Image 1: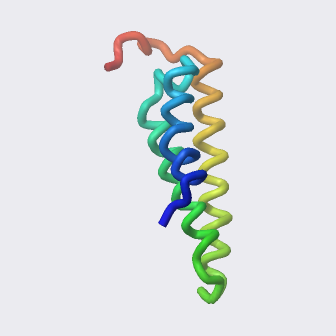
Image 2 (image 1 turned 45 degrees about the vertical axis):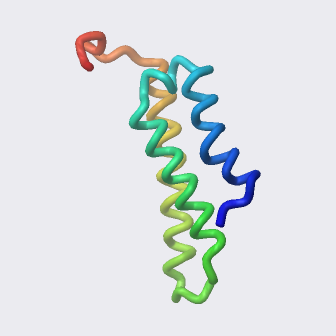
Length: 88
């Protein structure tokens, strides 16, 4: 069960970012992916540690994925792709 603090962090914060940041509002799929990855990371960290090292590997992989999504958003925010205005 999620605490009220975590609920705010995982439900409200992405919505605030989407409204307040042009980079996020233009990238709803990246925003959703990041929110899901952050939720997965929180769940992995709460799981018991007796997983033969696989839980720790999953935590590292999820942290790397979060970093990659953030880098992708930043890259897109600072680079213009030819024909970008035509996509919908």
